[in-house]
Every structure is written in C-alpha cells, then in structure tokens.
Length: 375
Image (cartoon, rainbow, N blue to C red; front, top):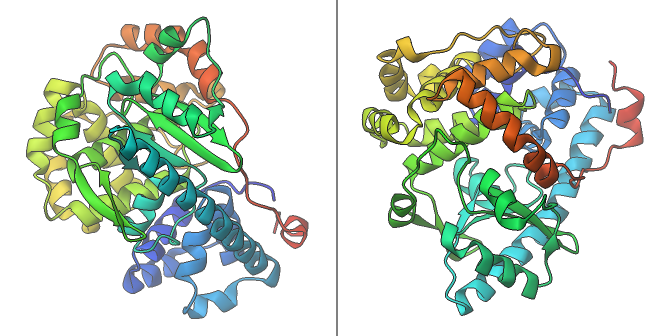
C-alpha cells in the first residue's frame, strides 16, 4: 500500500474517532473534503488501523469504506491480535525472570498505553515490548535478557559503554518477541531528568490481571513529549504519536498540576520541549477543548513557542530539504543553544544510526488493498 500523506483533516478526525467524540466526528466530517478510503490509507501508514477499525465497529461510517479498505483494516486487526499474544507472553516471562532476580522495571507504552489510554489492550497497534530499568542496572538487565534467550538487535559502535552514552535504549529479540530496553526516558545533553524521582513516583497498573510498575502521569506526559520531539526532529513523526499524546493529555488534564510540571521543566531541561510539543499537538489536532487546564497553562508561556511552517503534512516543516525545517524547530524547542544542539546531533548520529536502524515487524498488506492504494 502506498503511504498516504497525512493531512490535518486526517489527524483531527482520527483524534475524535479515538476519543470517541460523536459531536467532534460530525464536525470533522462536515469540514472534510477527502474520502474515508483515504483516511483508511493514512491510518494504515501511521499505525492507527486498529484505532480506526474499532472506532468504526458500530458506526454507520463503516459503510462508507470500500471493501478493499475494510479488508485491509481487518487484516491488520488480525495481525495485531497475533502480535498481542506474543507480547503478553514475553511480558509475563520477563516479569517472572526479573522478579526472581530482584530487578525492577517500568512498563512503557505498548500494552499499558492501549489498556489505559485507549480503554482496551486491543485498542491500539504495537509491535514490541518497552521496558525501563534504572541506569545503574543496565548491564544486569542485558544479562537477564540474554539468559531469557534475547539477543541484541541493536548494533554497538566502537564500544558498548560509548554507544550507551549517546542513546537511551537498546533493542532485543527472541523469536517473534521484541524488547526495547530503556535506561533513560530520552537522551540529550540539555535534559537532566531526576531518575530517583521517576522511580519513587512510579505507579502500578494491571495488565491481563497482573500489576506492573508504570510511570506517574507527569512522567508519562514528559516521556510522550520527548519521544514525539525526537521523531519530529528527525522528520519521521507519525500521526499515532500525536493521537497518543492527545489521549494521554485528555486522560490526565484534570489531575496533573501543569504549572508545576512546566516550572519543574526549567530545572531539568524539559520546559521548552513540553511547551512546544504539547502546544503543537493540541493546535494541529484542534484538541485544546480536550485538555482545557493544560491549554490555559500553555497560554501563559506562549513566548517560549517556536513557530513551525507545516508543509505537505502537519508534522513536516519547511524547508523540507534534508528535514532541515524539522531539525531547526526541534533544536529551538530544546532548552539549549543551536551550536550545542548541532554538535550533539553530529556526534551522536553514528551511534543512533547503529542502534536504531534495523527492520521492524510490519503487518501484512492485503493484495486487494495494494490494487487500490492510490484511490
């Protein structure tokens, strides 16, 4: 299937479908000029097929999809069901092994994101398991994964310790199961996150009847924002990251002390990233009504906003050549100067390429969908 270029119309409709928000969906449809087939193509290209399929399950909009597009969504739903069981089995096995060794971990994204913020383990696509361990336990966690049959999928450049200095995690694989092992939420010299705070404030959430440690709501927002910032800076952000961000913000808006979170960011380097990423996500998704308390807090820091010049997609900024517009926006969003950002980007690039560029599991592309991808 040819990847559809994401539009603001696509993003805003997907956000309202994911909520679900019937009035918002109706408003988006009135403003929409493209077909729902095009929306299905966009959802498939941006990891949101399952979100769209579930949103349309009991909706008359389902009839507006062509048979090939509906079959493509259903095929991805079946593929995700298979992946889900693989990931849950891997999670249970590693949780047992880590517990026996007294090794703490926090469950990131994946099953937790789907279960809590989309309301169902089957509510969002994910292909791997993401775990966070204390930085001091990194090597020990590597050994535990190796003992469980997981091998490095990430490459090491020059030395393991040097490579680990420049990145926030490594990827591992055992059979069909993949694990992204993090020892930081993100890695940049301008970021000074309090690791002890991350661990002391963690919470518990039950997945398939078993409790797992998860991030606090505040750190969940920080983690999602920094992840989206990395992707935006690399000019490879997908709509699913923005939809995730809106789901998280809508779920936490009533309880998070946004001014305290933003003010705390002045000390750990997350102030600029939070103000810019959260405001950008709310603006392009037209979702400020879903997080009114956050929106009010962000309005008081409008002077820290970095202007973006969206191009063919709301997540791609001008000038497009070599992703320069995105890189410049991300550099200015960080709480550092451009020279430091560029120096870090150049020095870390070979290590990031070595660690993160490898083939990832991809859902099947039904032949019927391929024949009509340009429609």
